[in-house]
Image (cartoon, rainbow, N blue to C red; front, top):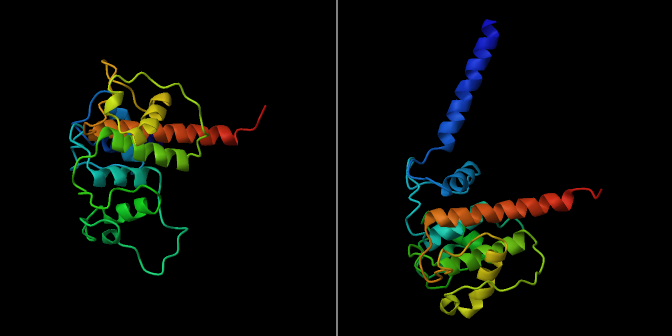
Length: 218
């Protein structure tokens, strides 16, 4: 009886530790909570410190690429180099000792590329992150070519022409949505919290597609 009680107590303790770890950020609320929690558990995102994720803060270019590299497990395993690549070979304003340098290298060779003169600490816009995310999702998830009906985006004229398709496909897959006024706000900086939501939905879509491809036909 004592052994059962001890086992139960241990199980409750482990459960408590797990829940506390999962809910490490005390500044995350509402619809973003589950997405950030899932990504944290998968080792995809981390906070500004142990207790704060800063969901309302602007997402930087460096953070954006790091999220995509971690989320989609982008690496250099299949590439052989004569010389070890460093971030400063690709980007003028990057220190090779920066915390994000390896992620930028991994992203670059997996087609998650930024402008050569990018400042990694600057905020990335919603349309820019959408384009990087969709390109990576479609490549890693092997998504089929689809014919979509263009969503009525009221601020469509503000979208860069070369990024319109990526945004339309994001809306089609329900990874992103328009605001209550029917606008996408493409030139606005995306927040860390919303970026996490987009990434979590993308990974879920990729996992669902992989599962459907391995399910035997009835």
